Image (cartoon, helix red, strand yellow):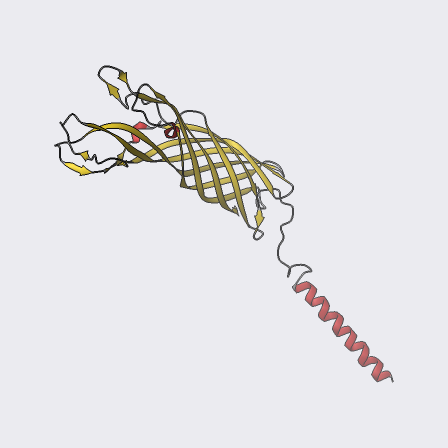
Amino acid sequence: MLQRFLLCALAASVAVALRADEDVLRPKGRSEPWSGPPTPGLVRNPWALGVEVGGSLSFFSQDVTQYQAPTYQTNLTSGSGLGPLLNLAVDYALTDALGIQARLGYDQKHFNTNGFIDSPCETPPGSGLFIPTRVEHTTSQTIAYWTGGVALRYRFEENWVVLAGATYHSRSNASFTETDSITSGTCQFYDDVGNAIGQRRQESGSNTSAFTAARWSIDLSVGYRIPLSENIVFLPRLAGQIFLNPLAGDNLSSGYHSVLGQLYAFTNRRLHALQLVLGLWFNL
């Protein structure tokens, strides 16, 4: 009887010791996925480094003043398009909820405008016979900027983040493609020496000087932080950019008639943007 009691006591002691060793080697809860405890910074420490990629949806508009027929239709007054962006950012937590971010990046603005013009066409050239002709016009514009910005960050409800700040845009390069297509009648376009080149013509090139060299925007965004580990956070955000100065100066020389004067003018040329940004943030 004593021997059986000693064996039972020994077995119980070994079981308790094994459970204690297991708790030491693997603390309670460590085997479960990390859910992200309350943190003083955007990730965990006060300093964080972020890499952001995304797209910039640009909204272009301008005022078109028409002086006489033939005139471009009013759909030339607006356009839109999508371009890529890339940012490298750093975040510093001032308090548990409030922080400040600095950002350097590359941002490409792209947009298309479309319109048409109804114009009399002399055919054949020199005949004095004019027929009505419709010409469709499309312009594709791309402007690239190097950017630098600063923003205040506020984190609420643990994972929601709002940012408000300003961004400086320095124009890097710009390009354009213009396409004209005759969609009615038998008229054709002609080159500089009078040779017929068909009912469609296209011109491409660089027009960097046509756009404002430096622009400022006010940026507002909202995002949601998704902890991936103790040291990494995924932060998608939606941002709006309101620009304070025009995209380009007035264009007052688009057309001119020797008797009637200027045919039309493009003024108040603006561009704003909506951005979708995907960021990975790391502890520093």
